[in-house]
Length: 305
Image (cartoon, rainbow, N blue to C red):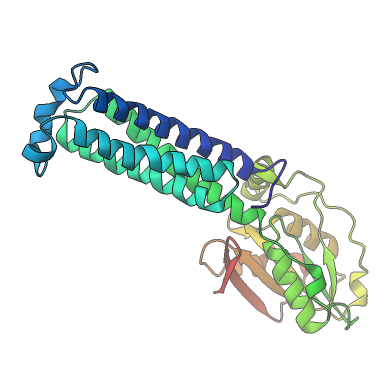
């Protein structure tokens, strides 16, 4: 598993290790207590035994707490400790298992909701399971995002046609990969739009969202390419809050009157077409696009809409 010094994945992984250890150690301790005193008197749990009688095979399995201890040890104890060990060892399987065992805990608590009167401990542990499952999901998403790699050396046809240019902005490298593929396909030069504002990480995500909500232009660095020298320009943009990304909006404003002909590649998470993004770029650039591609991208998996 690739390591990152500063990343959302690293933070989510630490929290997932905490949840798996917290739940796992607690479950093992509870199971040991049940094994030591199956009657439940030592832990004050003997009053709960009558509630088990509504469960299947109660006379055989729930005459005391021995079976409950075994189930607790296996379902919530050893499983979570195994996930914690995998996470600490840097194995991707730990992420998946950590999230799954959060769901397992919620299902365990649902059985308690059915068998026992509503109580604080069951409710709080249901929340713990939900938090663990959500953390596992987040860790998985962040891991895939941060391990998504693009090797520019794989695209050897870029720059063979000096009449064409591909311009792109990309936070997570998803748009960059599509831009590289398009430039390699048509032999175009490439130019990256670089923002002067924070765009990376969690803070960058929310900062970009602020620009997206207000439909602002985000300050960008000077574009090194002479746009008027190219016969055709392909503009690749992600979607921010249902519109083109703020750095691309700023680029279009600066490029107005300099681009002769253009087509657009729009990349987004939802499955809409986002033709409004193409219409906005046409309006700002003062041209009519020749082609428009709308591509749904979810953690590096692409599907043209």
